Length: 222
Image (cartoon, rainbow, N blue to C red; front, side, top):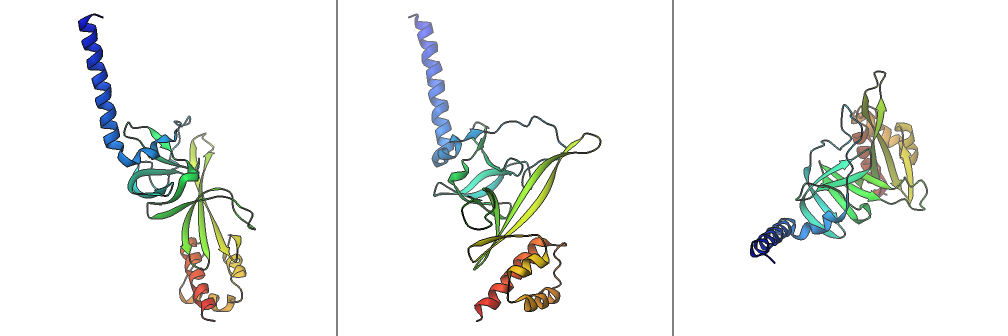
C-alpha cells in the first residue's frame, strides 16, 4: 500500500476512534437511553406544538429500567404519547415506554400505565399522577390534531381524569360523578367544597385532588 494512503487511513481511523471515545465520555452511564427509535419529523405544519409545556427539551428526573437518572433532557409528545430524549449527536430518541418507571418533568410526576383487567382501567399510556394516597387520581392529557375553517392545522388539548378507589377506576367527568364515588361522605364533602370555594370547571385538578384528600381524612377518622 502507498505510504501516503496508509498514513491517511491511519489518521482517518484515529479520528473515528477519537470521536467514539468522546461520544462514550459524553454519554457515560446514560447510553441505555439512546437505544430507542429516532422520532420522525412531523409531516404537517401546525400553529402550535403537541408537547407538554414546551417543545424544547427540559431537565427532568427519570427512572428508566430501574435506573435513576437525576438529570436528563426530555420532552413529552401528547399527540403521539411518546417520551423523547436527545442524544449527544442531536438525534431525537423515543424511549421504550415499558422501561419507564416514572418521570418528573415540568412539575409533573408521570407514570406509564399499562391497561389491565381491573374494572374501568383506562388505556395504556403516559399519565400524570396528581394524587396518591388511599385513593389515586390520574390525569391523561391528549393533544388532538384539528383543522379550522381556514384549513390551518392546530393541536387541541383535552384532559381526562380518573379516580382509582377500591381496585376500580372511575372516569371523573363532573362534580356529581366524583361525589357519587366518594360515598358515604357526600354531605360532608359538599360542605367542604363550599367552604373552600372550589369550582370544578374553574380548576378541575384542584377540585378533584382536594376533595379526594378530604375524603381520605374523613374515611380514615373512623
